[in-house]
Length: 335
Image (cartoon, helix red, strand yellow):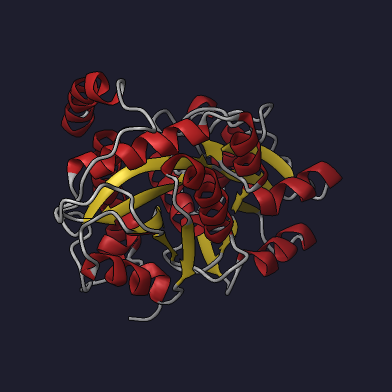
């Protein structure tokens, strides 16, 4: 059954379709100053250091949409405080479309993980479009007699708390995906935080741990080598990254979805015409085989949507993860 947020998003998307469908690269919306947009280079903030998934996605997408916009996209890496440093910069920028940010699921989880933020997680920003969805993969040590999600649930119920899983840190998606799994399956798993997922996966492969909710790029090489066994992907639909692996939802926990998503946001108050132009260029670029292949190589299934749909997704994710974070007692490690 659709939630009210989802219903609202569908209605808004339908209303936008007629307008956006006639948009072309030749359209020239104006900013509040009256200048045609864009008339100068656009700054795209990446909240992480160069070389990571967010940075790769920023540079790949930026290069692609710069052609349609007729202006260069300059990627500006501003890491720090689990994306908060970069988000505050965007929140304080002029609402003219010349400062954008590649956001991710942390926008939704930070809203609850941190008692106080220097911006409003919804009102301070204007969603432009989701870029892609990156599923996690539920893996186990192959020495365990666990070959499906159903087997994992049964084993965890038989030995409450005995099954341990690593994460890249408390509050990270690799942690919260496990908490959501435990809540929805009615089991108790023991979370073991690391300063990065790599060491946790090494302990999983050595037999010290039992399962993990791993990023696809980190897990798939070990799955192919036989050092890990893949049980399911955490996305709502099967992923092209691992097409033969079922979803958690179809494997025994209906409604489960713990995907990491990426998207582009602008400063709150950015003119709607500017947002529509940016959305058009992103959607067009993500429809090309070249960009789709590049994103999949980076570990994400391309999945653009409308500004209204993206706004509804962010709001629903904040609500969903707030419940899980509060149940788990997770807090940001810097607090």
